[in-house]
Length: 355
Image 1: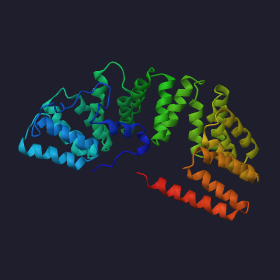
Image 2: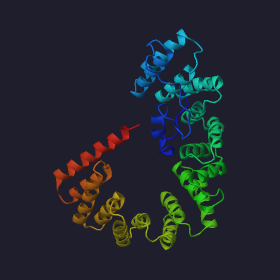
Image 3: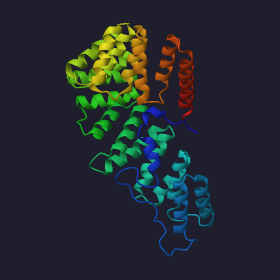
Image 4: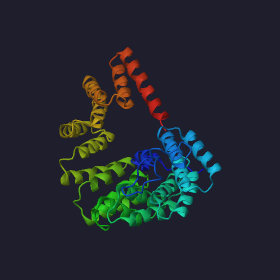
């Protein structure tokens, strides 16, 4: 079987998968085969379709498939059966098998728009974005206004096939901006960076900055990119440009503090982190970094307070527990240190075990 695409490229996809087959994935999908009506005998196809759907909705995919395959053996070619089997295999995660039956459903009923949509998504989830593109393009062409889910998945398919202009047009439609605008280049740069396509992400971010040098967040994105690449002077320069344009954005103070901390400018980093926290006290990142910076400055007690604050906000984050354990160890609080370090290890193992 083909490998699934990286998880990071599909933030909304788990929702799409959970909805598929029970309601339409996209806004205008047709309904699937009709549910059983009152008075329908238990042996009728409608009743068996309804029972199979119920089993699938409960996560009992093999049982649902067994019902449908039994019906296929008894009544081969039954209208609507390929559609139901395709949805069931899709929900089960057997995407290539889903494609087989969804293609049959389209042949049986060319107006089965849900089958078209699910076939496109199945190809995408099976790691075959080039096959998904024409189907998802059809979905886009059916309706005058963009459907966000359809545009997003189509844009990611374009990225995976390195058709960056196609991706830019899809994301422009998704966000309702002109395809050649600075915003469309910025959105595409962000998506490219999330997919680890760093060179084109930098190219598109620079193009956005060229079109509109004062576009909020474009210099921030470039700064993030350079920070990830450990190009600290370049990152600092971009974050400072962002501050001139967007001084009320807490994230830029946090990221600039991160850059300063990497070149051991701890006093500057601390001031920037305080400003970030004053603007947005709900984000844990600045508290965690502040704990690290204060520990480096030798202000361990203050570091402990910052890290405890981060843990109170996000108790399942392994990083502040690990840093707090180190701080306790420096203070000679061995039992507290061992507790926090052990908890950090457990949380990290739990996180690593997630699919």
